[in-house]
Image (tube, rainbow, N blue to C red; front, side, top):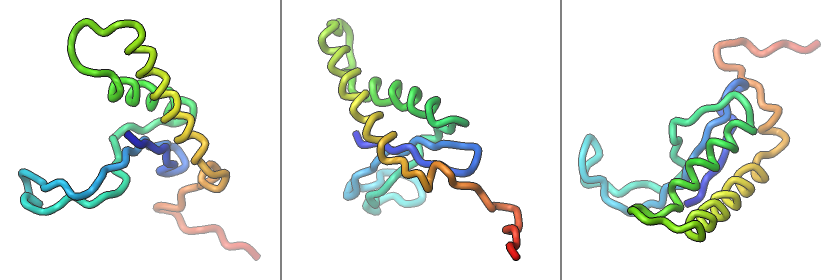
Length: 113
């Protein structure tokens, strides 16, 4: 899976997952239509970048682990390693401009003279 950490507003970092397009939606309002590819929010919001990175490590590790009983240590360590790579890529992709982003939602921008 491919993940990214995105600054939603000045208080929240959001974890997003890449959704491949092409699959057909099976139920709901858009049933029968093809999914569009793009970044999908996972509903995970964090006040600090490091907290988002730790949460992403957990999400990516769970996604990398095979389901079922009897997981051995080697399989678990491989899942953690692949999750660490996903977190590292997501954190490295955060730009300085995004890090400094401030929200103007609900406020008028300050006038400069």
